[in-house]
Image 1: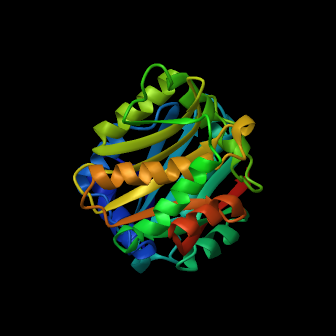
Image 2: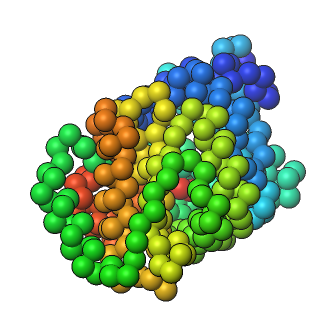
Length: 325
């Protein structure tokens, strides 16, 4: 058996590994096409640098490692996505790729390796534990079947939210935020690691500004994705915000992303208000929408309760592991 690890030359070389592993771990979630995978590589998230490696057995690509190094904040961390074809597991490929990740983390002057393992199959958690990783944060994946929604239930929830939100208004947009609120979006986005559960992960608040928000949305569009946003306004300031995003070419599936409320404006049902209003916007703009998936910290009972009331139901979970090198 000849095992080797080397830099990834082309996204196409890793795509089949990515496709098979995604289908294995999340069989109910659409997998990016090869063109979408290439676009993801060509249009990375801002304030990140990437390294990618391929693991081969007897010359055949069977393992894929992607490393992301934050460059504006969290400078002690390296984020790792590691995939090995199910047919090639327990043959040393994952360990060889992980050893490369640890080596590159040390060379970059970082202290922590952070990576996910899905709960659907035991392989990821067993591998992370064997690499001396520690579980840091569990996130629950929940799914909303848009086709089964009861309009009367949603209307009643929305009306109740408005009764608690007197003096607030709504703003909706797609893609890059309007200039008059883009700084407020950056402020709320930067609060996420403060306000959402992070468990035992060694993470700090992100340094988000208007340019980073703008670049993230433009990059998302170049990757063939579209984002839908709803925010709550008070005295012209954005004080709550939520996002749903999906592939522009396929209307059936989307992801519920960030929902956050400024601490000074909590207690007014703004989280429920913006989520329901945004769901309504997305259903109008994506008439073929069938399901929406979302991740929430397993201890974030407040948001999980809102999601359950809307109709989200738990599907599985992911645990983020970390190792101090």
